[in-house]
Image 1 (cartoon, rainbow, N blue to C red):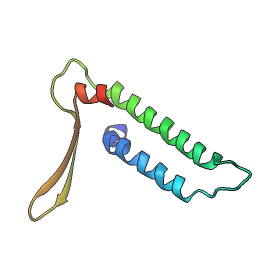
Image 2: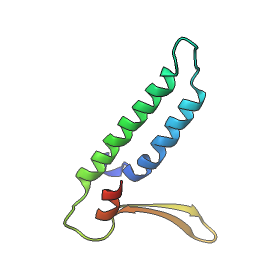
Image 3: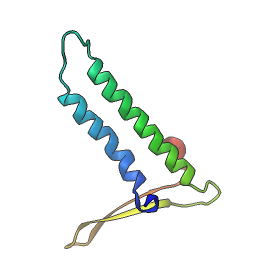
Image 4: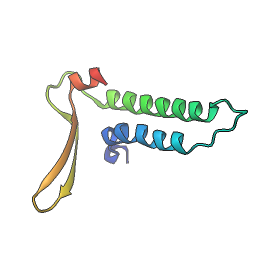
Length: 93
């Protein structure tokens, strides 16, 4: 099941989901923005775990794209979204 999980898409989606939870979290005057802090902290930790998992799945000796994900966006014209990571992009992440 882990082989079919798209880690690169999850790395992109997790911050957006955390942003939505932060926007819709209720702020009580007594909480002093703790709700937004906890959501942001959980989002950062989840994203770091995903990045660590991607790093463990990468073969740093190979050149070129690895962990390639392909999504068909439009049928006519045939447009695909392709995500991939190479060693340089992992260092930047």
